[in-house]
Length: 111
Length: 111
Image (cartoon, rainbow over all chains, first blue to last red; front, side):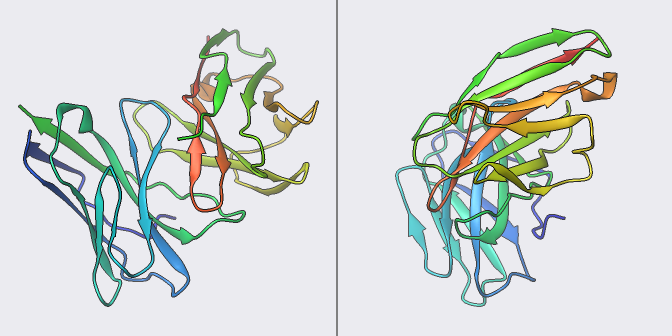
């Protein structure tokens, strides 16, 4: 019941910015865009989330289009350790709201 | 990032046996979740737990599964009579004010 669409896989060059797209055309007004990643069957790791403004933290930047129907996660300087499956998920912030994982985007950082 | 601890990291059990997976929660977090991931497949929601009772469960979470916080601290998932198809990674998660934190998982192998 994932409400987002991501490419199944992509490669990016080590040291370059990685731009990961996500479509969420049916997002509701109170739903946030969340990004998680999973490195080799470890537990999913929170990256960033946002509602409508662009967000930045120590891991990544999140750019959300004005109509909120799509977003891009930017890893500014990809490293080999960023190789992972990246999940874009829409959900209401906080509270008792489970995460609905799709198949995600398998990102491989190439030396 | 707050740490969610799961034990054991790996468990092998015979079909038909009971298993208990444990999760040490982050203090002051009120919402708990179990997810599972069969090898090569997506992360699937099993159950959410709030205020010492189940608040939501998926179709996967049938009568063979149960959850509890027996001592007010550890959060457990019990599978009463394991089947081969229960082999998977099981992840515990805690919901904070904005994001969820996942444990590193228990790899359950049913033989």
